[in-house]
Length: 423
Image (cartoon, rainbow, N blue to C red):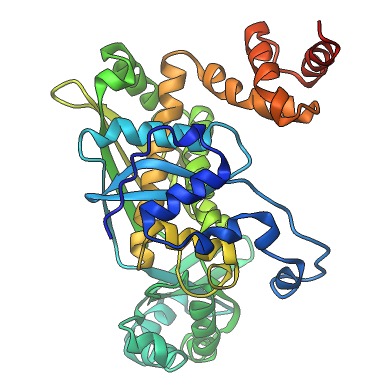
């Protein structure tokens, strides 16, 4: 069904009301979203089957970003994060892109790589060529490990071989290039690497050591671009300031680290909500930020010919819809249903659109009123709750914290004490 991700007043509703609206907009039954309530979500018994030594579960707030249009289709995006302002900022940035068609994305095929490290090769350059001459044999041997994957159009497609000088000598490293279809792919490529390692060692005249995927997933890239409206951003000066801020992040690793953290605020929240591996995604993105030995920004912002702001983002995005927590975590399953994605590539493209939106929102705040104003007004609710404010007291305490420009727990406790004493 067609989904309208523009939901005015959504933030002013209760969680129960938001779930009802969400069910109505996505065509899901309200019962499908019941797992978003902690009482019906991940139970300790389920968690005990997911990891070792389970003693309980930890709740993370799950919000829904609105206003997203990705490749002409509206998306409501579940995001799991403990940080205030993230969901609101992404939604607001998506609104600014919405008037210009939203986000446009593209992806390479879902190719992951496994590495087989070979040691003690007496003639590494010749060993490299012997392995390449046996390319088809190696591919066939790898694909024999996962006939189901090849049946669905995936599987090992190519190999490459690198000669890597190290402090312990020269290593010959073979890469298996594997199309993993709708999986994240770690298990599939690791199994293949284990299977081909002995044959590679025979060919190279060495011994195999490491046989595992690389999270530098630079063959599995997803790109997003959008135009953000100048008037909605705050005018030409804000657009110009964002371009200047982007230029610094492109050249200065100190700025780039925080700039990219803003991108990951959105990406990680969407990846976590869908039960995917946040660490793998983060490792891939940050490794992709290094070019010519320098850590740089992952995104770039420019001014269009008619004065609007255009942003682009390209990152590795190894996410999947089959296997892992996505298939066993009930909340992750509900999040995927809300998103309405049907392939790993489709999921990746929504996630990267969220990363670009989040990045734009942070840059806009820095280029206009400053990051603290918007962020701290939302953070004030967390501080008020930490001080012990009830639901009925929350708005009053938050208003005082913001008015006093003292968003601290000790001040919130004093305000709360005054409120309760009737002063």
